[in-house]
Image (cartoon, rainbow, N blue to C red; front, side, top):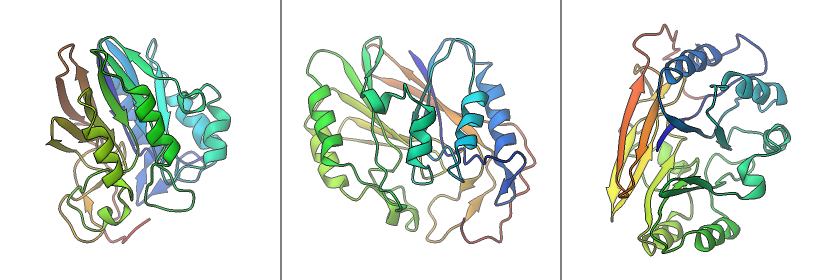
Length: 258
């Protein structure tokens, strides 16, 4: 089963508006055109920060741009998202019904790690209970999806915004051998670490990237992209980052944040 992870699209309601010099709608459109060339995609998973301004129009634009024929799109919120507008558009959004994505020998659970008004993340007790309730020793394999990184990514400034109860989360998932992978957004860079039989995986942003292994805010020159995830029946995962070959980002490297 092949899934595509995209993340941190940071769309605005107004067309042509830029963030750190980047036209985030233009880069997303280019990434979606690349995704449309993929064959056999079971779903697209968008791991948060879909909007930069939190406007209802920005979510409508996201919904319209992500229409790849025959491919369902699953959304989770990030710290820049407006929860009320996010859920208003996605009335059948899986977090509302807490449905589990069934994908052959895999089940995928979507989690909400947002603390309203805070850049950092937290998994409420209800989220941890959701994992406890829905991960079974039934011969299936599980992948969990959240916005905030649950383990340090190596950028000390970004890791101040890590999941604040990561120890509880790691303890819980470590007790469940059926959990094979955790994917997250938030960090605007590709990262993969395998710990205790679990793969912790992040995707590049569809707009601008953060420089890995830095202590202060820094923009990387890497191209926007997405992550391809092939979930095999034996519980293994084949994954690859796919980037645009070229794009004039017009990055404002002198900025110190956004």
